[in-house]
Every structure is written in structure tokens, then in C-alpha cells.
Length: 161
Length: 448
Image (cartoon, rainbow over all chains, first blue to last red):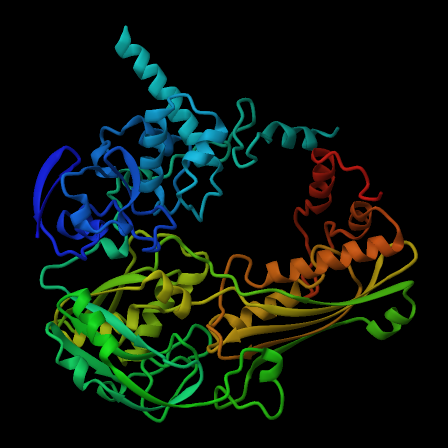
């Protein structure tokens, strides 16, 4: 069956089977391998994407259900030469170790900061509660999100001037 | 406060992991500086390439048919229905690879595929390698393979495994290895102790649970006779050597290429996808990919050992340890993996960071039909820590002294000698650590 989705701003028409997972569609058909599979059961958050503005475990979404949806993956934020402030903060705060959870963490942070530009540490912990990291112990990831909030606030005030 | 204490305080911040403060003496390059991780840019943008991110044109997908019973003799395996599934390219069973040898980190006790007449020893044993054009076809074919087995007694408890009438899981018996520890006169010291405390402790299986499951891709270069394997390992050259000996290749015919690893914590010390990938690539001549599901990773790959620890500890009237007797029985599961070293090392740390002049210990790594246990952060010492710290608390309580003071009395100092005879000739900061914890936690003596 045919679906139409907008991924990282580009409209795509794709042929899918009813049982194709959105995760596999993104990784295998579109080559967006920044979307990771950790458990395949919606528990770990590695496959997180932003779908229609909401954090979504792409391993639990049948591709036909994503018809007409707008999807953002980590590839839709910054590039290595031009990092998004959240990505920059993850690098600077030392929040990245094995890195496998990081695309999901970055997107969960984005979703959180879009809604709450000045979160408390508790709100950050809650905002990332759907994403498991096994390396860092989370402390530096939380530092990174707080740092990103500061960076985005400065950026925001610049653009208002 | 000494200068040294001051410096530690300066380093301390709310997360304890962040240690750089302006004004601290810095080295020229790294110590005392914030160093940005070289591959962080790749990882925050999703550009980093992990094993399952690698794909080739014309690539085939692998699924593995696993054991159907934790301890059983394979009587028959029927792949006729599975072979008919559209898209199946090859189904490899033991009789197709008669020359392939067993593998393993310390003892090569793990078969690549179980042949009829041989035993499956845990639920992760491989019976067949299914190679197909798509993952779905491989999975469908896998589920159509029919297996007949003769069930044997399933041993899940290492103490049962050590009994005389227990069936042997491996030909040489169920005790993989026994180590001993002896120093001083333990019996005399117990006789002269004010208090002797004996307790039995049990730890559980723990999965290391790295975020990424075992996965890999392989390619066979027929002209040069070289197989390339892109898969995670923590022992690149050991894995290369083990894969090569298993497949009867020379080491220069096996290349293990390490992509970015999605965590390991000891779990990726063992061979996982490597040999099956190589066999499939060599037989089909096409690129092949094998990714474990989380469930498969949990069933198939190593765990932290559950260890039964029996500690008998003596202490004199002044609160000094006099004698320590310990027994470590580690459930290493169906295969040895790192077990012989893990359980051994655990015993050598049986007294923790505490001085004790008289010691006696024995450790056994024991086969069972559980998923095999291997390396995980600490390599046997985390299990021991649970047991010796409980002993220390119980003894402090019986002596009616502050458990922190009791620890300080017995703590390792420079020149202390560990149970395996190592003299600690360099910096030993254990006392300082306890004192700092007392200060930071506002320690009130631990007695009500």
C-alpha cells in the first residue's frame, strides 16, 4: 500500500506492507540509521522520533499508521558542521558515551524544550524518562539539557532583538 | 584539613563526575581539562555507524534456529518444509559443516551448531543457520524447522550439578574449575577470636544489557580467501583467533572490523554473531547480516554470574579481623565463557579492602543448563562485595561499634597484602574514601 509522509521536511511517497514498522521504513527504506532499535518493544526509547509533534516509539508504529504524518528524526536537526544547540550541548557536557541512546535522547530533549524552554532539573528527568541510557548514569545528559536550555534562551533573545 | 583533603573538596560538585575546577593544577594535555569525546559529533547527529547500520547491495539476512529445550539430545532436525519458503537461499545444519570446531573464551566448549546425537545445553544453543533474501523469509523458515529431542534432567542449580548422581552437562563433569586460597592458620585464629560469624549469601543473574544488541555483517572475498566481519567485540584479536581456529582458517583470512559499539559492559567479550556470519558468507558468496533481537540477546549471550558465597569471619575483642574462610560457587551456565576467571577473581577479593592475616578459600565455577555467565563490570568482585560488606556490618553490630570505625580499623593501607599475596606499594586511598563519605553523609555513628 502507498503512504505519504513528511520526513525531516521532505515529502515522501512510499510503498509499504501493512506490517512494516515505521522504524524499519525509516532505517531501511530511507536510510535514516540514526533511528536505533534497542528492544523492539517500546521500552527503551532508542527508536524515538517526533511524529506530529509527539515523542513516538517508531518500533511500535505500523507504517500505514504514519500516513500523512510529519516526522522528525535526529538527522533533521543539525549536521556535524552545523550542530543544533541541543546536539552541541550533548557534545560539550560529555553526555555521549556509546551513543546508541543519544539520537532518542536528543529528540526527547527537543520535544521537552519546545514545550518548556526553561525546565527544572525534575522536569528534565521527567522529559527523558522514556529513554534508557546504560553508560552515563544520566547526570551529564541532564547537564546537557540544562545547558541547551541556556543556549536556546540566548539564541531566542538574539533573534528578538 | 590537609592539603589533600582540600583538593578533593575543590573537585567535588553536585554530580561528582564533573571534576574540573579553575585553579586546580592542570597537566599540559588531558588531566584537569574538559576533553570533548572525539566521536561525539558523529553520535549526536546519528551519523555514527553501528553494526546493524551497515548494509550491502544484494545482502542476505540470517536467523538462527535455537535450542527447543535446555538440556536434551538432538534426535532429528527436519528442514524440508523450511527450505520451501520463498526467498530462502540456504539452511545450514551441523552436517554441512563437519570440519568446524568448537569455540570459547577460555575453554573451547561451545559448539557452532548442534548435530543430531549431540546435546543442546541451554536455550541459546544454535541448531541451524537460515539465510534468506529478507528477514521475514528467514524468520518464517526458522519457525518451520522441526526438531525431535530426547529430554534430559535440566540442572538449574550449581549445587545439584555438583552432586555425584547429577548428569554430566559436559564430558569432563560439571565443575569447570576449582581454585584454592590459603594463608596463615585459620583454625587456630578462629579458636582465638572473640566473635565468629558465618553466613551464606546468594547473588542473582544480571544482564549487562548494552543498548545495542549483538549484530553484524560479513562479506567473503573468494579471490583472496578472506572473510570480513563487521561486528562488535571487546577482544578484537582473541575473537579473530577464535573464529579462525573454529573455521580452520589462518588468522590473516579473518578480518574483524570494529564499527561503533552500542555498549558492551563485558557482554561483548564472547563470540556472538561472528562465526555464523562467516559460515553464511562463505557458503553463499553474498554479503550477509545477522541482528539479534533483545530477547535473543538475553537468552543467548553472557550474564553476570549468580554466586553463592559462604563467609566465615572472625574478629578479636579490639575489632580487628582475625580469620576469614570463604567458599564461592559460581553458576557459569552451559558454557565456561570467562567463568573460570570471574569466580576465581571474586574469591581473591573475598575480604574486600580489609586486612585479614589468616585466610582459607575455595571457589568452583560450575556448569548448569542456565544461560552461560561471563564477564560483567567488576568481573566477580561485585558479588563478593555484597557478601563481605554484609559481614562487616553484622560483625560491627555484634561488637557494638560504629560500622564505619570498624571498617577504618581494618582498611587497607599502603603496604597491605591482598589475599592473593599482592603488596599494595602505591597509593591506597581507601581510608581517605571512608572518611570523606562519613563527612559528606554527615555520618552520625550508625547506631541508634
